[in-house]
Image (cartoon, rainbow, N blue to C red; front, side):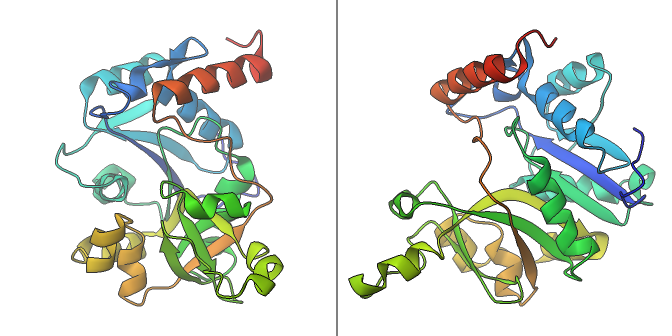
Length: 261
């Protein structure tokens, strides 16, 4: 795809997509606005013009076929990868992608991922000097009681201190409620990595913190690898994990893109 003047020429965007979702069977192939969900995510990332190439990494030939039918690039990866990060790393190791110095990971179930989120993650690597970058957004205190929403706290320099499904920061004294509420950040699952940092991440063994929280981003943090967190104005509209999510996404799509093919 064409590269904008502001984009680094060595950025490869990879969209990992696994067919075997349990809560929404065949999720990447379910229709959003009349086209497969994975195609809509690929279109969204392409339209941002932040990467020289956008590739879908998947474990299923049906997903490859859907993306290629839409004019995109998709590659088959190992069906045994435990995470999307491992799938992205496999793509990065392939000879045809060796020239890319920075890899961007956008989840395959985020059709409304924002330009701000993608550019924010990349800015941590391209401008702020971190080898790993991700994104967070201010959120209401109501997310603190919701375990499926991941929270993050960061240092003054933007470095992630911890990610958790638990309520962080914890409110010890109700008198500090306003201060606590101003610090609540919802993690947005977009990542940027230098090639070497991504290789180091997936080479690390699973960490107990990662296993307990079921959060893979705790693995590099526990190993002492700094991850920059860009703060954007608002979290995305939300991923697609259930039938209800898909219905809401289609309603939103119709509102935003009525008449778009």
